[in-house]
Amino acid sequence: MSNIHLIIEERSASIGKFMVGRLLPFRQKRMVGPFIYIDHMGPVKLNERENFDVLPHPHIGLATLTFLFEGSIMHRDTLGNEVEITPGAVNLMTAGKGIVHSERTPEYLRNSNLKMHGLQIWLALPQKLEQMEPEFFHVGKEEIPNWQSDGLQIKLIAGEAFGRKSPVPVHSKLFMIEIKSTGKQMVNIGGELYGEAGLYILEGSIEHDGNTFEPKQLLVAKDSRLCEFTIGANSTVYIFGGEPFPEKRFIDWNFVSSDKELIAKAKEKWMAQEFPKIKGDSAEYIPYPTPKKN
Image (cartoon, rainbow, N blue to C red; front, side, top):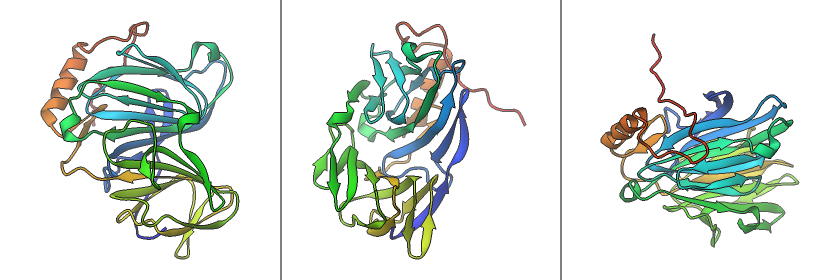
């Protein structure tokens, strides 16, 4: 990989009872293109007494993208959607002016031995769309562009690249690409990308300029010129990024906006429980976090 600007190591973070590896935001790099938040979930084994339960919680000003490698999550939201996401499919929920959702182990899998592994991603919205009406789309595994090139298996999970376009309906110019290798070989994707770019190593390794990079590392380029690198045998990497926004984005808990006042209003609205309720999943919710005392 050419042009490495920053190496970000996964950092442990808690989402309720579930630990994740956090990649973005990072103090030295808050966003890569419109990608403002990336969590690596798992891999983790859940026994028959454990379930994945993220209680109802709100969002504004962003779109959430869920992509699983293993496991299953039942998504429910205040638009009335109840959709199971399975490995290889994409859930894209655009919060806009406000939405509430929950993510749980489906009923038919509860009290079973399970594995959970995937990526949870937030995409900031363009300023003019931060207060759009909320939307939800589910794109099946078979609909994601998937092809072989020079011995590599490539998927265009979201956005545009390589002269192709994913059916996942994103709201700005971006890309999220999966590359899988069987043998060790050179990769050259210079000229295919744009804006800012990062490369996350899920498994295996890559080599560049005499250095070897391994899993749980996010490599951020100075610009989108990822040019040439050597991918190790049986490796999987994700390349993502796109055109950055001219305005700064602020994050407070689950709220993202270019306007701090909108975040403050959303916070007050959630604390007063004035957001819509999820039909069939409104008995519990995640409260706005209380600041920790020193």
